[in-house]
Image (cartoon, rainbow, N blue to C red; front, side, top):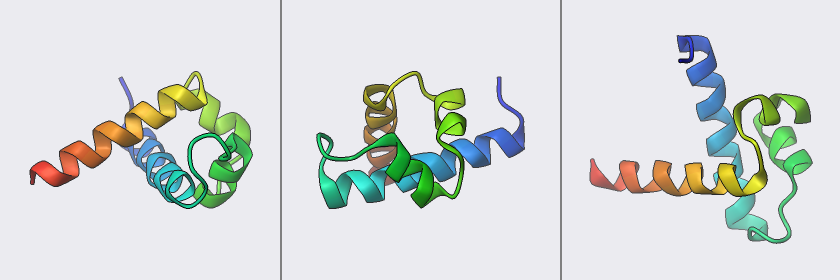
Length: 69
């Protein structure tokens, strides 16, 4: 379970990942670029997501939920 601050940080990372994936594609995007876009350290990304693939699926879920509303 995440605190409210952690949920906000996770959302910030997911939104940054969406920007990077959209601009570079999954294959060319790096965790370092996503961290930079989110203005967090690379290690912070891995505190929330085990891999780039996990992060990609979270971006996908985020986009699906956004379109439901």
